Amino acid sequence: MARFYLIGFSVLLLFDTIAQCSFKLTAIHAQPLAMSVDWLMRVFTNPWIYISIAGYILTFFTWMTLLKKAPVGPAFAASHFEIVTVMIVSIWLFHEPITLYKLIGAILIISGILFLAVAEAKLTKQNSTV
Image 1 (cartoon, rainbow, N blue to C red):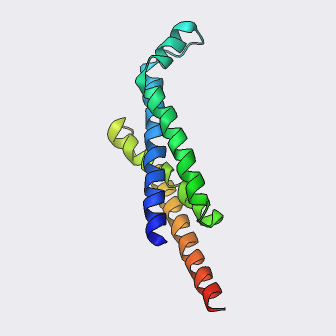
Image 2: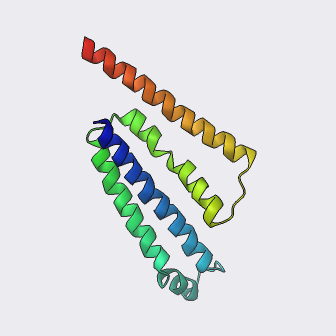
Image 3: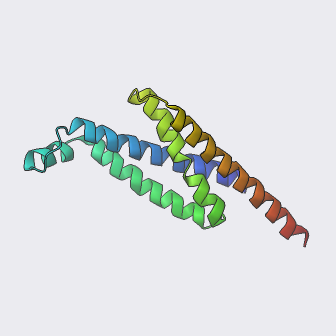
């Protein structure tokens, strides 16, 4: 079961990170922002928007598959690890700076996920011995 979670959440993070970064690439390539037909044409003729849409759809189906077996609390927390993966990819892809606040936020997210995972493991162990 641990292997299912590891693979499942890795795939979820991959799809979600691709979707988020593709959406940003769409926005960059569609500039300047203007509510006009020209702007809409720039958005919908850009391949990144379709990669983004596909990424969101794949993320949704991966998430639904994971929720069939994973406990909701830890799963919901773990799904927010994508904030950290998008931040890391954005540093490389978009040359975004890593600030102290981003670093602290990433550490807090990771710590929260780890604490929930440990708590869930202890609860599962307790329930199996009862």
